[in-house]
Length: 466
Image 1 (spheres, rainbow, N blue to C red):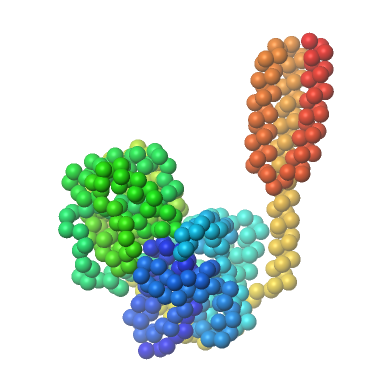
Image 2 (tube, rainbow, N blue to C red):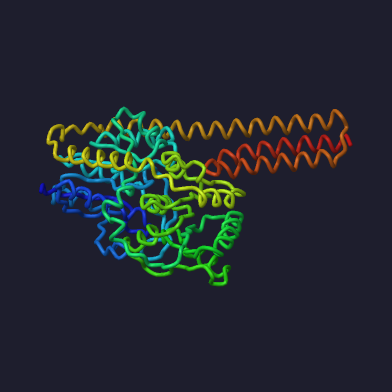
């Protein structure tokens, strides 16, 4: 076996089932290809990994110094929907709500590699959003240090393909789970026929009521298993509510399960219904029926069901769950594309091995810091100037609209009540614009003062004529 030292980055300091699969699968797949892995895990916060993994998680700010010391052969950006520059609230490993800097997981590796021979590998992450113009400069700079790029869906491929870097589109590595955990090695925890359901705190009441009604109907024939998969999204809170609403008829999994125990529950179910991307994949790879109940409208989930030719199993609107459930239960599982998927994942890992072991071109690091910062300053300046101009133009248009309405009222001698109502409506429109561009409050104050002054004069003239 060839021994390889790997720094693996991802969101391992927060508890989300899918994200914790990536290092497990990476290590096992590489070992099956005769590559022995010495792996360190890195995340934004120091922690001990959940799901009974208990691995030490190093802070990403240590990645550069540890790379200098250990001289990793590669830094692998683990996977997940992480290629963006936004910060969202997450419950961390200490159950505290934090602003989670997920962008560190893919920016820090490039910065830690720029003065070394360490390879940078993107292990099928995803891009959830389009990039703004100034963000594209950041992406371009970071990508200049990446040696192998593979993403997991069409949307991400399209977003990154315009940066003049070779980009592969592969499947999420969780599709390899049966290679790592063969079905015959997974024990059945629940004796009855059962359906697994998952949701998280972002579900609105309409979707909640619809899914609860469907599950209640299904519970006449199946045991309903409520399975938390992402403590970081506080999914247990809503699942507990559903458990209570069912008068404890549904089965709530309210314990700290290991990765393998979660896989076992999904691998032996009759059907999975839920919002979890990796919940759907896990059930699918073990030949189970799946429904993507995607009230969150994730591009990754939509692309997933399209890739699997299961578009009719994907739901992102209220009113069709009952019909889809009946159809899916009455049909055979569609897993015809699975062999193609495994071939694709094997090729992905072969490409990674070739990249790591190929000593050529290791020093082709082309990021130019001076050029990057110059472009960044320029693009950010353009970005804020465009927002400012857009705000000004919209408010100027609003002022013109107000003048026209007042003049029209004067000219046609409309009654005061009608004129007043129109002014109130337009004022509400103005205030909504003001909130929309709260970052430009100084401009708004100036425009607002001008507007109020003009309005007062106009109204005074109008009242005098009355």
